[in-house]
Image (cartoon, rainbow, N blue to C red; front, side, top):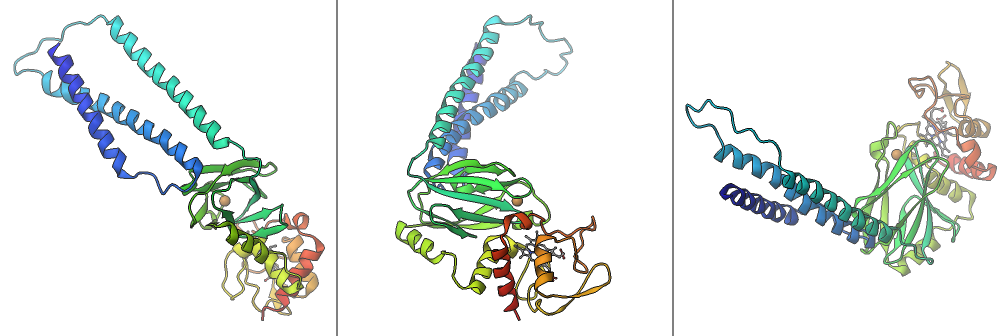
Length: 336
Ligand SMILES: [Cu+2]
């Protein structure tokens, strides 16, 4: 009996110690959404259980090492113990009840996080190798930044054009895979006027680590201004630049002569382009258009991947209209 009381005291002290260490350690990043509050509450309960489990295992082990170690000269076996029905009852019931309680708290949290607001702002989030774009269907606007009004629920409808990506903003505490061919919904109500970074959280190829996008949480007035500033330009050249920013081209093509995944557009129009097969072609309208809708028809020298193909997605033939391609060409012509 003396040992039972002793062990209980050790475990209790270690549990309290664990909670006192874990709680102020600020293990979670800044909390910046309504959803983060309930998720963090769930985390705080889990930290207590984690501290208790650590204390139970380490406490009992350390206690036994100290009080039950072999005395010098003692070579006898320990007493034979047949079993203890009460103990087994306890260590079956306590974890069962704990897991059930967490199942209830967990599903309440989930219901809370999924709670829809009918007035939510819809944003389509599109991942592609290796850039994000954001469409605001209610306003006819596309952006390469995710701009959200503060304290208003956003319904993010997340998808991908090619492989699996994942939407993750750690301050929002939410993560959702972007799956080609389906829209996955995520609801977030940002609470801090601030800038955050969206990271791709699913390894998706060569430039996965650079697949970032700026997230800006702004006042309603600044959001309205953003919508106004992001209207599709009327000038074809400006429109071409707009598609370059919002259709993912920017992730692979620079305009300052530097090489990213693909060649730079600087001085491209009218130049002689060396191709992988040894021939040369003049970069006229037809060549640029073909490069966009059929990247593998002519591969620029030095840009074939290990499989002999172009790293440029073949999907633009489907996702861009002829008008959009003409805008892009008009703009590329101006990049001397
Ligand atoms: Cu990705």
